[in-house]
Length: 291
Ligand SMILES: [Zn+2]
Image 1 (spheres, rainbow, N blue to C red):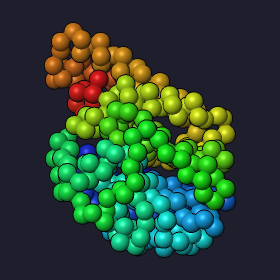
Image 2: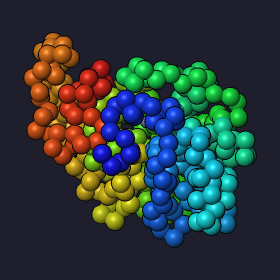
Image 3: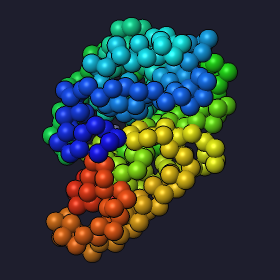
Image 4: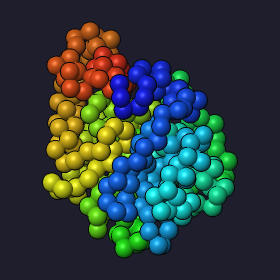
């Protein structure tokens, strides 16, 4: 498994908490001013320019110094603005450090609520404590918000009940680049956080929204996995639609999740999509409440 640098759901849970590290952060240049930072945690998108550095997500706390150093090496500075695409710790773990450095954190309102209250993801036995004030988004929105920075029009758009109930996608309209947050895991079955409002149908609708904004030359930064494009997103959407159709049909027959898993309804998809975090038997258990 290459995308995360770890290979099991247990390792995913550990990585969510930030206690595993060491995978090198690498950068992928998308335009002269927009970059993707890979490595442990969710993919970062960063826009650099004279009006200041605009960053999407901030991985885990122990990586903040390396992230800021990378951004500076690319010609940027400590981020002026940070978008949290959702509340998960592999996307917001750097908030406290960056808040202390003066970055202004912006998110959907539900992200702030989860960071204030703390959260538990039962699928991974993962508890995140309430975050201190300095780690919280100080600007929140419920539908969308637009930034005008470095010659770029940046639309941050809420997509309801997809990976969570507080997801945003970020569209750089001038440069034709989209950061999807965890609505998209490029190339493998996605984690969908059904404990916190995530649903398969909402994820499909969110991908449809991204495809509305995209064309054949759009560069798409997924929450996890390598840089994507329109074709990759269409394949991902089609896989989700097949899974949703099959599982909702079985579910409406009143079968339990154990009975559904025993039927192996998605094994034909595993060769393409089951090489990331989950095989379909594990993935069905993750998403079944969200079907
Ligand atoms: Zn996530």
